[in-house]
Amino acid sequence: MSKPKVFEKPTGVKDYLPHAVAKLRRIERNVLDCMQRWGYEQIMTPTIEYYDTVGVASATSDQKLFKLLNQKGTTIVLRSDMTAPIARVVGSLLKDKQFPLRLSYHGNVFRAFEDKGGREAEFFQTGVELVGDASPEADAEVIALAIASLQAAGVPAFKIAIGHVGFLNGLFEETLPGRSGEQEALKECLLQRDHVGYRDFLRKLVIGDSVREELEGILRLRGGQEVCSHALELSSNASAQAAIRHLCEIWDNLSAYGVQEHVLIDLTMIGDFSYYTGMTFEGYASNLGFPVCSGGRYDNLLAQFGRPAPATGFALKTTRIMEVVPDEADDARRTLVAYVQDDKAEALKEATIRRTSGETVVTALVTGEQLDSLVGLEIAEYLTNRPFEFRGVEYDRLVLVNGKEGQA
Image 1 (cartoon, rainbow, N blue to C red):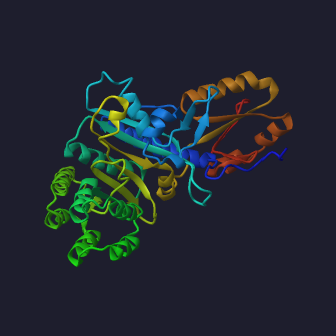
Image 2: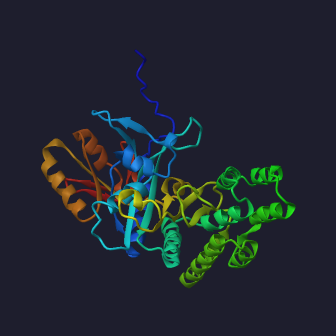
Image 3: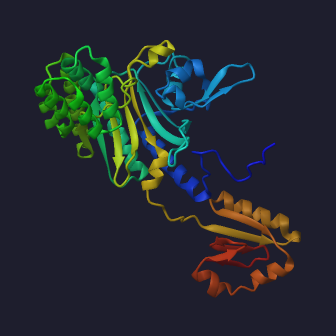
C-alpha cells in the first residue's frame, strides 16, 4: 500500500488562504451586484451532472471532462462550464417562464488537462446568460455588461475583441468551397491565435494568389467600425455579409452605451467554432496573456434540452482576474475581548453586543497572569498609536472585562 499523500494536491488545484478568499469574494460580490443592477437574477446549479445530458452538451471537449461513476454505474461529470447546466434548467424548471430570461451565476468549474504547469483543473467563473433574444441589441447588452463587470471587479485596463463566426464560415465557404478539412485547419489556427501557423498553412494550399491574399488579409481586419466596411468589400458571400451587418449593429449599440473605447472588432476572433453560432468575444487585461472573459452567441444549445431558443452570454475568469486586480487594504477593525474563567459569561455577552453592532470580535480565555500582562500594557501610549499583537494576530482594540479597554 502506498504512503498517504499528506501535503500534496492533484495537479491543477490549489488552496486559497484567507487573504485570497477575501479578494475572490470581493470580486464575486461586486460583479454579481453589478449584474443584478442590469436585471440578471442569480442561479445555482449542481457541481455534478449526468454525462449523457450536460456532459455531451458542453462546449468542453470530451477528453477534458472529469468523469465519475456513481453507485449505479451511471457516468456523471464535474461541471466543466456553467452554460450547459443553465440550459438544462431553462428547458426544465424554467420551461414556463417567458423569454427573454436574464440569469447570472458564480461557481467553480473543472477541466481535465495534461500535467502542465499553469493550467488550472479547478477555477471560478462569474457570468450571465441572456436567453430568448436573437437581436444585435442582446449581443451588445452582454458585451456592455461584460465591460461593466470587469470595471466592477477592479480590472484596471482591458480591451474586448469581438468577431463573428458567420463571417469566417461564409468567407471560407466562398474561397475554399467543399474543402472542409482545410477550412477546419485554418479555423483551428485562428482559434489558437496562431497567425504564423495560419500563414504557413495558406502557403501550402493549392489556391490562386488572389485567394491567398484575401485569406491572409483577414489577419489585418482589426480596429473600429471601419473594419466592417473593409470586410463587406472582402466577401460577397451572403452569410459573411449578414454577419458583418450584425456586427455593425452591435457596434452602433455599443456606441450608444458609450463603451466603444473598450472594444475593437477582430474578424479572426472565432471562439469555439463548434459551439458558437454568431458573435463571439474575448476580453484581455493589460499585462496578462490569457483572456479574463469570453462569450458569444450559442443559438443551438437550448434545442438539446427540448426548448429551442437563441442565447448569448459571457463568463468572467474570476481566478485570472485575481492576478490583475490590486489588493485592497484590510480596513476591518478587529477587537480582542480577553477574560479569565470567572468572567466568561460577562465577556461573551460583551462580544455578542459588539458583533451585533458590526465589530469583528475575537474572544480569548487567558490566565490571570496573562490578564495582568494585558492590563499592564501602557494602553494610552501603546494602543492609542498603533495596533497590537496577541498570539500572533494583530488587533486594533482591546477589551478587558474588568472594565479596562484600549483602542488603536
